[in-house]
Length: 410
Ligand SMILES: [Zn+2]
Image (tube, rainbow, N blue to C red; front, side):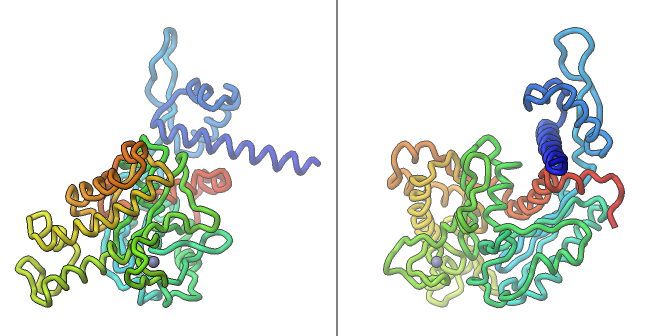
């Protein structure tokens, strides 16, 4: 019995510590009295927790808050630069790494094209190199990094959602991405799906800050969504929630890489848009196209500059995307739908088409309530989300003991 009591007390304390630390982090600075009000904990408990946090170095006492008269309260201030995190966005054809402080400010960034799908061993080695590179470029000591988040362009599976589904990435079959990268670093490494990370990034730092229910749609080689419901990422029963790209738009449509026919992704994914533009130009290279081949960036740029073929292809993709978004709006009634990824560079051209489809097809009330906007964080949204995962995990009750250690690790 005694052992149970101690274990229980420890977890209660870890939970309280996590709540208080996260409140201070979100507020920037806050008084002990405000923490008492917001947590319902006693003043004695908050004071003891605050002492632990002051000793950890994450929190300082500074400044004075507003006072109702008498002695002004001393504020607890979060030090956003006391530790940093690293995020790597692993796309199908690129890697983006960022080092970030605890306030979402990117302090170093590196991007490279890479054959992630076809070259898993090289990808894992490059992820480690890029992480080391952004840490060094930002002038950070590896011992002061809280963790590394990596996002993958596929759903996660396994008991702990720590393995990637290899249906779209057969060359990765049997490989342990998390274990391999973890061996290279003393700080913890975490995995998540790329669209989930985009949703988390927009919720923490971007356009989604004031929304409790939102969807982030990543428009890349594949199309996926991250769903935030009641302020938490929604993963579904087995971790595959949000696979909006594989919802059926046309029962007789082309075969998709998932095996189904007529998936939204087979009309909206980057390969489909590139193929459609190439088909309409019938093998000729348009004047605006780069010499080494069509890119999505060149297509969206040409569309915005008024090229009629590119405009029409982007609008058609937007109309298909809009059908899927209308279905999503009917299903989860989000306050916000954020479009990110390469096709998002088409800006208002894409937004207006998707908006029109949603207004035409979704339940009027849900359609009116759903704001459809572009990502505020742009190309780095997913990498920033990957880094944010490391913050989120570091301040969870189960990881706090390790996070708050003031002694240098390894
Ligand atoms: Zn599919």
